[in-house]
Length: 404
Picture 1 (cartoon, rainbow, N blue to C red):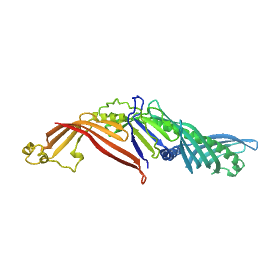
Picture 2 (tube, rainbow, N blue to C red):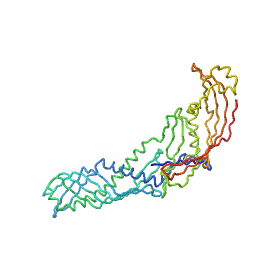
Picture 3 (cartoon, rainbow, N blue to C red):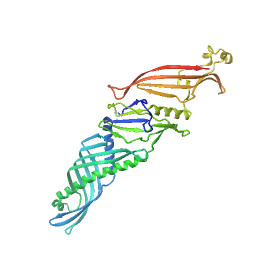
Picture 4 (cartoon, helix red, strand yellow):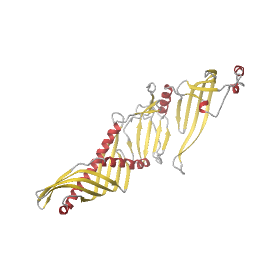
């Protein structure tokens, strides 16, 4: 199971414009998980279209024989072993060994002695491929991938002619198989590199902005080229939020972001204080942070009679108990402060208590301005007994001021 560990990090030093708001670490565990998906995708895409035609000439008893192999379709590709490693400073190396494939094709032969055509099945055995894929930031800010290098090898090729004068081919079958083996060996890497380039085109067409619940947008464009070490791949994203309601963009700029060297989980995500505050401000500008308290606490029912102890005049005004609602609305965007294992939220707003009338009209009973500060100490660890994360913590009310 893919596990996400969200690591909250704080601003540490002077503000730089190109610092990431969100940082992602992919570990070896994540790479192993993605290896099978990535290689299967490339091989499946490669099998969906014919390989390049192969033409050549061989000599049979001092006479030239021209051959053409076309409509080459690679199918039933299987492999016994796959590995993936980070290549420091370059990208990711994906390798397979013990591969076997069945290749269907059509062929033409032409010489002074015979002209023939037909189809055949080629059984390719002992395939090994080592493909290195690099990653970089495109000019648009999107992720771009490209083939760095590729090596392939084929141990054995066996041709089974389906039609034609099959006994004639026994005289040059071994030589033809050697030529096909050499041609397929080159084409494997060429076909894989072509698929990597096509995937890069698809990545470049992806939007660098993602919407959340049609209220917030977040800029996930890269701020720099991905970095690769022996243990992780690091991707730095801009990670700044904006309002989709009025398209207002915030001007927060994150400070340098530091993450630990955790490697147990597949993916680690670090979120900067600037990124969280840009989300808070954008949500506030979109009309957020206004909610009915009782709506989120459906088990609690408050009526005007419950408030008569603190507001005696209410019992005179409401002879029969009427439902009471509490509306809390922020007067400014909540401010978040991040420290190691600690999150503090500063909130300022207005609390309005009102009674619901049978006529569906609301009558205000009480209004108060509130300024509060809440801190949460949070600890996130991997669980040993099952896949997932163990979240523990405590919440502290630092201060709360009410003015009527």
